[in-house]
Image (cartoon, rainbow, N blue to C red; front, side):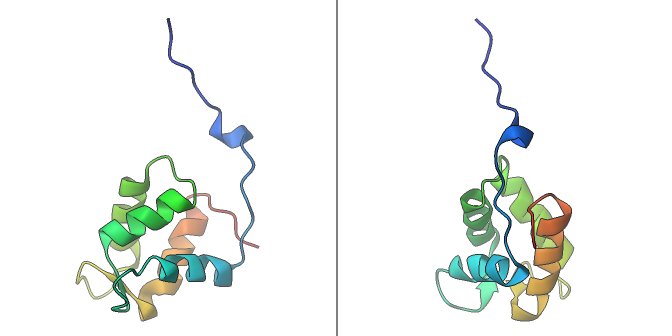
Amino acid sequence: MGRATIDHKALPVPTLTEDQLQKIFKKYDFNNDGLLSKEELKKAFDYLGSCIPGIRASRGIHHADANRDGYVNEEELNELVKYAKRVGFRVK
């Protein structure tokens, strides 16, 4: 028996505004320290439907973390949204 595969491109992808995407990321700042950790981003990308949320979290930090402290802060959040748009999360 073969493995069932899903054509993820055939699944409907909701369109979000940049503001909505920012709010989703902020919602996952569970400890309210104003910083998004890799684990928090992993959960956010999982919520957004990513097939590979851990990788998206790592790459998102790499892309957005201008001060290289390992977190995405409020000032870096726009770069995280740009990354999310670039990898296929639809934004109005």
